[in-house]
Image (cartoon, rainbow, N blue to C red; front, side, top):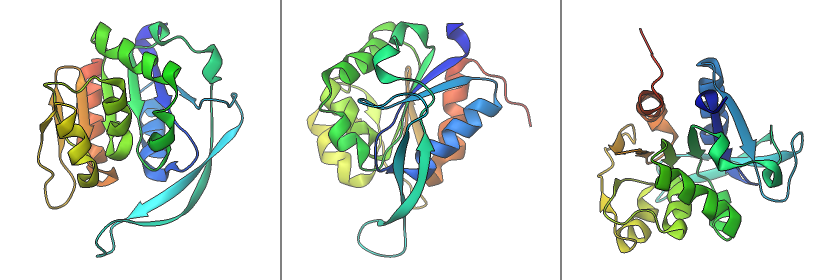
Length: 195
């Protein structure tokens, strides 16, 4: 049933927290999350990388975990899903080269279904050509790409905890923004979260 299924795009060296935490949070809310990677099948894994903020001029990177894919990329149809999650890390750098993946992303924008993209995930949105006139944020190093793609830049707060919504799109700069990013995505999905 499409109203409880989320598609998640992953690849080797996806950011650990940005793939695992949303997967777990959305599963907790009762969604089936189909995590896929081009060239890989359900049950196979992708390597993750842990990006941290330790006072350097950019994030540091450490080995993460293996994350198990729950569906086969070649078998998924975007029309079967109610929402899309695009984690960051280094994976978007090469995932954006896959034309079928970009077509899937465009489907969610053409149909107005909720999309949550974080950090370097916006590189995929740029490549898909869906940011023109949209308010978004990303990891600051991705700002030039977003702006040149026609996006309106949503400033990142000093703790990287904010998220921006523009229509069906919710974006955040990095994993410290998970609480706001996932809450706003869940609201777009119509999920009821009571505290």
